[in-house]
Image (cartoon, rainbow, N blue to C red; front, side):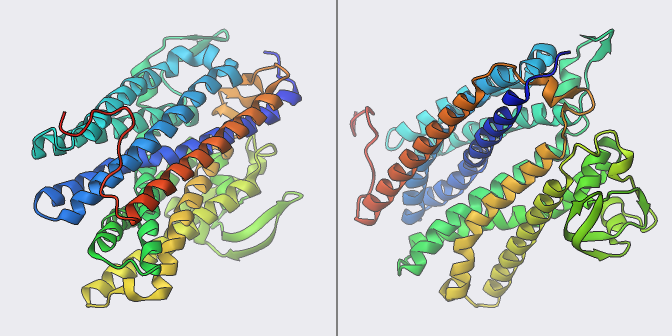
Length: 448
């Protein structure tokens, strides 16, 4: 197979990273936000008027984010074919099923989001509440399908290659590949952390500005509770996901541990980078690397020098991204645990300025952790687009205009960011000024 020109490989990488990094944040809200809306809506129909106000407001926000996610998701689907024809042309039959199912999930989510938005004062309260269930389920299933495709790239299965030709395609085996469940669970929890901490940060900002009513307290506590539970479960899921890397992706494990050479009783390296094949500027804690990564002090970690992709894998990037993700995750977990522990003892941390500053930073920090995690997932697989089956430089397009398309994508996504922020800020401002609801453009008039 002819390798692509270097001129198209770099911008194709940048474009895919930029598009995916933007979309995954919006997609997190599609996964987690409906469940939070369900909780406040259910509380609202049981008599809490402020909770019902939150449900109305959050559903409007969900509609804006869904529209942005629809655009970015559509762009991503086109990019897979345009930027990586070597992957989709050769393995499209293998990995196509989850993409087809994700399209169905997208339409189901859109339909029930529309019903929910237009159902206020038109549907019986409990029926209206239940329209959130298929909407939430579709969002979760859609993410499951997308993660299934990505997990396949990390764990290619469901086919054989005979004389260079892909044969014996088993789409279900490819979709339900060995890495699917842990990778999806890890992302599912991350979506709740991002959504919960970001939404809570919005109301923490309101608290800092003196808006300390029941509505703002409820708007903080409910998403913060979701994020706290996800934060508690995430380290265990991440640990089990890491344990299987020794057999599934030893090069990614070596990069995470920053292990240049095969070693038993390997140390845990905190910080540090690889310089000329050796670890520099890092703190080494003896034996702890083997204990954490393989649950045994005498376990062997295969070094980058003994792996076929070791010299091409940017191990320092993977290592630092992983440690950034872990550091943020445990910091958020610690802050959440402290909040709930003090709350049980009657100490309201929402009245403490230092905690409000923490809560305000927790939202952006969760997004950074999400991006760091995806950096580990994607960069840690290099130079393979399908691990040890197809290289990235074999899959990329060989056209010469990718730098132009990359700049166009940056402009499009920047515009969507500006538009989305302006819309959300406008909605927030009108709510602060006393607007009970916002009209839906082109929607049916009230009472009709």
